[in-house]
Image: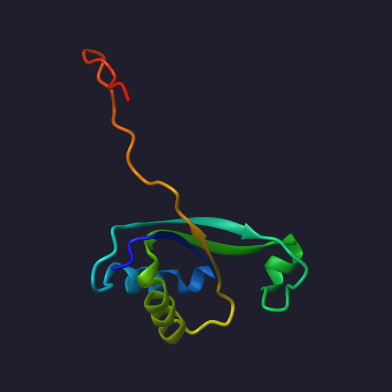
Length: 114
């Protein structure tokens, strides 16, 4: 089984965030986790922006990042494509060289040497 990891980043209108999150929370097999945050999109094409966004010169966007095995990318993207009704969703995929957690070092314990 291909365990090479990739980071999938999605950029989408805030109106579809709950739907995307629900799809990923309920993915089978389960995903290890993902992160979302709010952002402003900037660019030349504001054809799908609201009047408020056009006045502000930026469009409200949601961002989602998930690290998953490369072998799951096609299935996850197709699920989102087929079940989230928006043409205004952008994605990109990046290789993940390393992933882990930084262990907290207590004041009473010495750091672990590599």
